[in-house]
Length: 328
Image 1 (tube, rainbow, N blue to C red):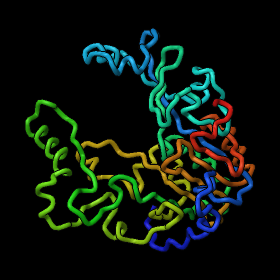
Image 2 (image 1 turned 180 degrees about the vertical axis):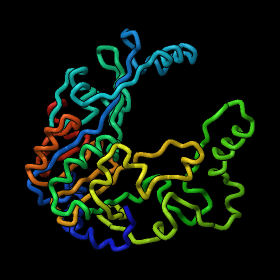
Image 3 (image 1 turned 45 degrees about the vertical axis):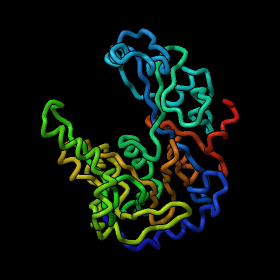
């Protein structure tokens, strides 16, 4: 996809998003579509290779180091659906379900919970649709627009390391993997860990341009500004996302970090819509779900997909922590 400086192409979104925010999905998802789908981001589950139950997660955290590492060495991690998670905890999956309520957590933002059957369930990722599910969704979206070769993708500007800036600290650092006994590598990684917080020397340095993933031209370029959020825009075709390795061809691939051993990132668009505005996809940075607005036919197709865990979402729905009345 190619960067575009004309952010007026997204003005229609601003006209259909609530401002000020009202606590519904329309704080970030445009109103006016016939139907909406909520695509639940995958969770993960850990179990023992031999099937024996794990100790409660909180008890594992408090174990002596050697004992906790013995447990960790036997862990097997698999993807988990929300439906599987709800079945394990004896709760109910429904369109307004909240992860913390599904896993019976008394606190907001719990990452890991022990199920009654002795497995550990970890929360889904926030703000991103993983590469495979993004590809599956893209293949559904292609057939529901008259302009599949003219779509706009927006990346939230706050993604770590995405944009360069004028300052004293780098936009990102990469801790290089390798032999922990390698003195040179260890010294390099210690330097990275301490240089950002150098309070004594940083005050005497003048700000300089700190490179980000995107170029300085893009970093200093215009943004699509929506309520509480701003986005860098790119233009391309839907089918650029239709293969599982789509991330390897994106303009926001971090080649510099990869050259130092980092794994290629999987940053899906925060926004995606076609020129005919037949649908819109929103992966809000604070959501554990991706929302698609479009025709009822599109929403039905997404919810029927055997590879996506998706539910029809009513307009004006709230996905806030306290919105899950069923599992309260």
